[in-house]
Image (cartoon, rainbow, N blue to C red; front, side, top):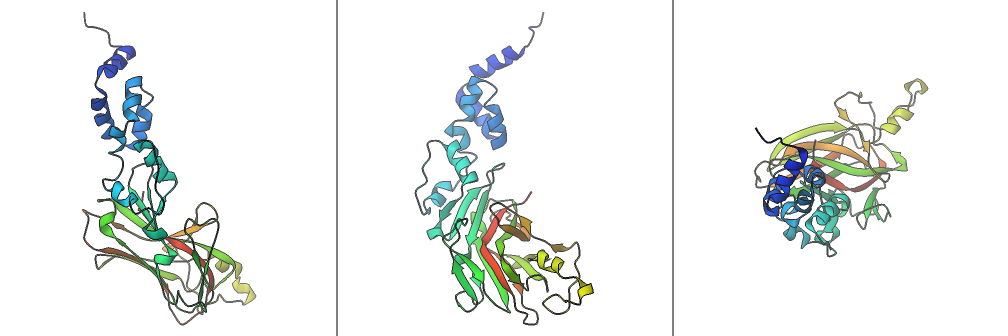
Length: 288
């Protein structure tokens, strides 16, 4: 007669496997699966929490990246480090950039600070001013005082991103109470990878301003002739602690294509004045 297989038999067999073997199997899954596996048995719990498992969920170059951290990153296990990077991105490169991980996959995320962006007239206090905000992860943000030519550009080396991953770039910003001229004309965005344009969009940074103007009042939107709203125009979304984000476009990192990813937002039609845009930076993260 065949032996009846019960749950206790299966668990017993798992407990008899070497921990290194269980760790290897779990490391071939995902961080989420590893957390679930830790509840299966004592053996799987130990293996699922081990450094042997979690080193495979961390980027292969994490030691090199953390060596660029502004402050030393302390941790007692690689699992703790993983979730530390997911929940609290680390400032690197003198505080000009932050590095973190996407929680479900462990893929790399970076944010380029406003200080590291190329902003037309950004160093001229007549047009932009540098401010300190307590809710900012960086030392300073930049606030638009008054310009007629809006050009913001950021770059990141494609090689430092996780290979074969679809990424999206997001402008992280907020609007001052007196923000003006950021709803019309629409802003244009562009993503260039290794010299080739891979994405272009129209975005509207201040939909609130557009909603405040009613054509029946004979109050035209600032910026001259009004561009018609359509489903193709990308609108900002709310993110934590009072910030907004708007997608600039997406790209695929491929197999480590040699070259920079250039991400830009511009509005330079007709010399229309605008103000009240507060920029934290540009975030590059995996897109689901």
